[in-house]
Amino acid sequence: MLCWLTSCQNRSKTNAAWAKTDKLFEFKGHEDWTASWMLDGLRSKVISSEKGMELIAGPEPKNDTCHTVLWTQQSFAGNICIEYDYTRTDTTTRYVNILYFLATGEGSAEYPTDIARWNEKRIVPHMRTYFRHMNTYHISYAAITEQGARDYIRLRRYDPSQERLKGTDIPEDYFQTGLFKPEVTYHIEVCKYGDQLEMHIQNKGNASDVLVCQWDITGYPPCTSGRIGFRHMYTRSARYKDIKVWRLEAKAGG
Image (tube, rainbow, N blue to C red; front, side, top):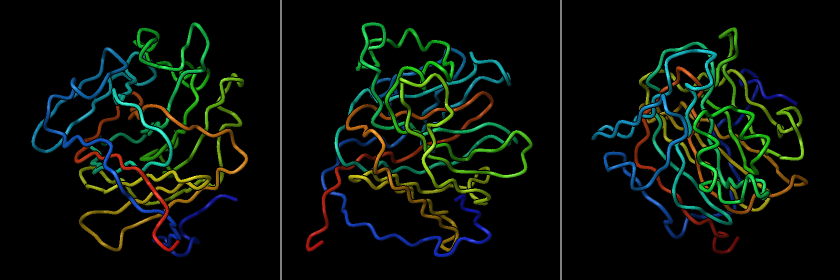
């Protein structure tokens, strides 16, 4: 079943049984990004300022050299929450942003588990290199269909045994969210706890503009450790601020 937000109820409802405990990572956005991150894609830019860290993909549509992914140098494991402020800085009517998390390579000699060992294979960030050779969760968001008619949020789990993206999606998809307007800041939290995964999105300037996306990942091969990455398809750009990663544990009395 697809979730069309014109009919969805309880946009802010969550039954989370977990709580954030230890802070595993923090990047405010104004620091030297090269100390904490590694970049795929030669035609992209990263600009750090007091406003945050802006990731700018290359300018040419349909040219794979203009994709980009910014990866944490640090890896994470287990139940985690990723939170950050996100401000879209493009006005394009196409293409997507992606959050990768708990990402590792397929584990072969050519594509080892540690993706830092094959960074050179992602100098041109062809999408197929990622879904064919990584184990990772992937959330598409601030995503626009080719016709620009509707936006969507979608969860995928890459499986290197497959040659295509088809079959990697995990229900539900969320369409027509009305979120991620240019130059509007949203606070995002993505929490993975056991077989449950949630994405909380809050417009920081409008308390009523909020959405919680929920997915049951029972029955899908788990991703248990790995890096976090922000992907921008060609022409896309956004600013990230106050990025944190937390360990999640069961709520007391839960």
